[in-house]
Amino acid sequence: MLKLYRTFRHTFAYGLVLSAIALSSCKKEDISSCGGTPGIMTVSATTSRSTAVTTGNLADWVIIQGSNFCSVSSVAFNDVEADLKNAYITPNEITLQVPRVVPKNVTNTITVTTAGGTAQAKYTVSIPPLAVTGMSNEYALAGEKVGLAGQNFDLYGVTAATGKVYFNTTAVAITKATPDSVYFIMPAGVAVGAVIKVAGTNNFEKQATFRYKDDRNILFNYDKNGSVWGGTDFITSGAAPGSISGAYLRVNQSIAAWTWTEVSANNNIVIPADALAKPGNYLLKFEMNTLKPFTTNTLRIAIDGDPGGNPPVNTYLWHPTTPFSTGGKWRTRSVKLSDFLTKTDPTKATHEVRVIIFDGDALEADMSFDNFRIIPVN
Image (cartoon, rainbow, N blue to C red; front, side, top):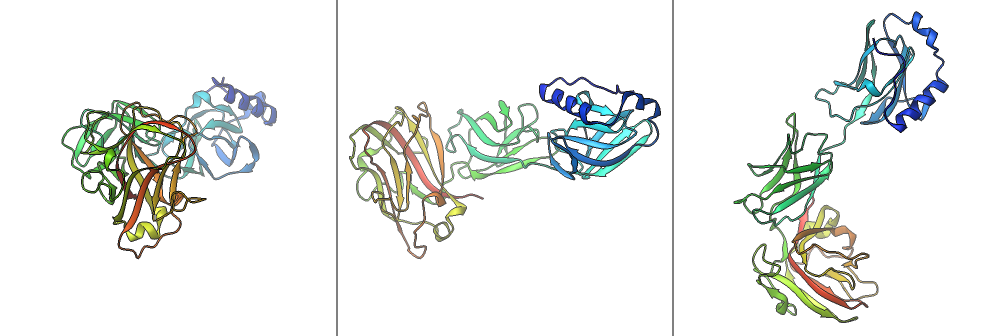
């Protein structure tokens, strides 16, 4: 039989014990009269025991109120049993934490089992989704250590022990994992545009909202379309910092304050009309590599806009509040198109795109860029 009173191992849980002792109407002598089939009267949050709740989240603390709880052997949320080592149980109450585990079978119930029988109550646990939201370098080369960012990897078994990363059908082992990131070594031979997904336990899997080396809607990649005016001197295939997909742009010079440095420009770029009409459904992405930190001045990316206006129109402005450094590695940067694109004409056949460094601070620049593109978020 479970002990009537249990010792909590955590300070927070210990505080719940004190609160439960102070507020509970049960007494130790009630044990002798506790028996029979258990019953659940209501479920409440620990912050408001008088208010009934029927929904909650993984890892919430709850109080199950009812009767005949003195010989509890298990408490399950859906088909997942809670850890009773950290539960506080009296004949009329069970205070415990909802397990942070995704159920295999969702029944939207709490089930309390005792020596006298079983009791159930309706209770819906919100299950947070598995998400893959970013990749440290979407143009990573074979052999490079890469990270995927996301949410709830641990809940779905996307771990080094039980998970995999897939590029189309190529499975890749996970070398390290946290709840919001997984790491792996980029395999060789992955096709441009390969679909990326992660897989975990119980057949859980999730496809990323981006692709490997996504070459849709390229604005500048310095192989197919360079600059119509300005910027050609910055295009290189040099060994430092090194190519990830052919030629790239390297700005390696001192830039004085209020010096207009146009590093890319083209007025004949095709942009999907849907991206201009519904910018909230698209991202501006590019790869960046810093051999010197980006510390001052402002990077401006304008689409059919005035990057030097007051205020600038249709222009993404990046003025680092703290030094930004990739440590000499290529990294993917992602910007919501709707964050800066407000006045557009989707009926135009072609559009002007400009990349400029300009502001009132001097900058010792050594920054490289590649693969400016507009990508749908789905």
